[in-house]
Image (cartoon, rainbow, N blue to C red; front, top):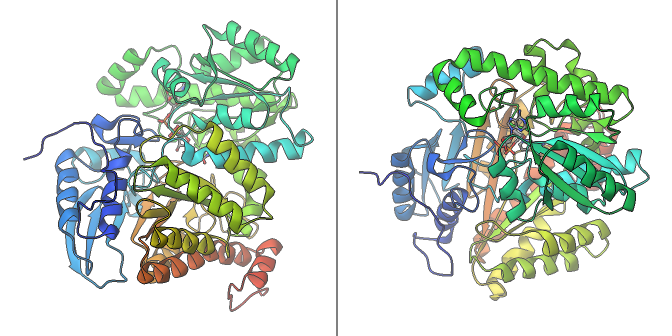
Length: 553
Ligand code: NAD
């Protein structure tokens, strides 16, 4: 019998509720994903990203928890789209949990087929870190967003967004990082979201500075801040498909335009001229009509972005597939502006650099302060890392278990992991630490509208790479490994993988950490070297990543 929806909170402190820290870490991270301070809609098991779930049902959640509490260190739990389906006898170095989420045979990899199978209770949408249990709240995307806006500033505005206006939409779990990332880069952000509750949530968690009464009020506040060279973020409740064309028609000069509404899923994007209640009713009563309306609105939204680009603004897609849905809504010119990865991030991917994150299982924020300091000591030459860690310590409010993210590359991540394991061993932190990452990483994803858009050799849609990444992480002894379909950009558009490893202070953990955190980012270097990126070839040579046919592609 399941108790159904209820508030879930991960245990804190150094006491185990499972048989070892390997399983305790998985349990705490699963529960943390559903913590009301972390998840966007925990009653429905939705963590973030439209309908990205942690478990298929409350019954499945309870069964996963019960199995983890009892799982031995030579057993592996198999989770199929949020449902625990088997426990296998393995060995100590094997992962404790293996997860596959939302995967469909290619001919059936459409939203329509997915929804049918979901309604039949056979699958769930796992997004990226929702169904792989390593979501850490909006901070998870904050550094990537900060890095992206820093790259925009570098390429277009002499290194700073001071007195520059960024207009964007979507203040959800991930999109909510945008206002803080812009102000961390000294700019002014006008952020549109159709749901007042989402805007308020970002105010409460200090990601957003102010909430305006209406669009005119928002523009006035932003103009003033721009004139004064003051960093400011302003949220406003409006539909982006109406508000962005309105700003364009009013002649508002904008420097940067992007978007992070839940455009990957036409059932999550709210169509223009509809209240949230009206949208919910239409979604229930006539799904096809809803999808048509949503896609038509996305076409208008995207058309306004292209028009801003024509007026000279820096415009980029922020990984939600707005362009793809806009084409389906009848706007053929949607792909006029680039995705953020080819525009700003790929050079980092060539070095295996990506979102390295960790969680203090003790629940004690002081443990994160200790790890922050350890990284500064370990990488004394990395000035921008120091700046990020300082800004994060000052400005990021933790959601759920205290956690931190920073981008590290191949040859760096295992050093950080081994240092953290040493901190646990010495008792410098109160409990073990788990290290994980987003699936948005250099070697772990095939996503032609996002991470692998416009690859040099045309290999955008080759999905062997994330599978190799997951297999290698399993062989290397990650604590849990996940392979997903459809995260970020929606069903049919991506395949991706994630891996976590626990620092419990043991010698065995040293071995797991060294292998996983060496090999995982190395697959990013291999993937980009194979695609012909010189920077990746250089990184492979400098960082001892072995590639049999290096330079032959
Ligand atoms: P979310 O579901 O938590 O939030 C989406 C937000 O969009 C909600 O607040 C919703 O009210 C708002 N919204 C929907 N329709 C709107 C409209 N017409 N006008 C204005 N606001 C509207 O989703 P999230 O976790 O914030 O993710 C947002 C998108 O970004 C998703 O498509 C996700 O897949 C993608 N994503 C991108 C990255 C990246 O690195 N760039 C990473 C993760 C997720």
